[in-house]
Image (cartoon, rainbow, N blue to C red):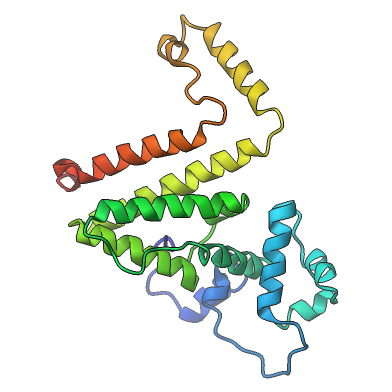
Length: 250
């Protein structure tokens, strides 16, 4: 769960700062601090309220104006604490990662640790349906997200993963959780999920000559079967990572 590597190495650091200044994730790299006194509006209260609004209305409807109204403050007062809406989103997302309760100590089995990481992360992301899609759009560099990454990387290192295989394994498990949680969150918010799945099933079955394998195995996901679907995939993924061939190919 880290930022994508930047291919523009060797460039002017000031130029890089300007690029990052208003981009998603910029809050973790911004070093400038105001020396002016701040009004009585706490950073913690702003982020907690932002999470509350995001849970209720989603990311698209969040604005600095709506957040200020919820806080009973003027929108300009928010800028004493956060520079942009993306700052709010980054901080709110990291607050979600703070809810992931990981074991204090690693177990003797790296697979058990990774399973605990994956199931715990999924539960947290589903608790906040906006979080999984947002996590795919920005670097996860907050202290809570990095704590979670450290746990997963340490477990994989114990399993013998190193170098590019380590980063690939970590990306694989993280992408699986975030991707599946994102899909589930979207579908669960639809009031017509059952009807839509029935329509998809009928559409495929009427085209059995074109898609014989698909038609012979639909429906692939039974209604309200998200949990078992996720855990089947988790077991397959862990079995693949544990395979002797997992680190033999580039």
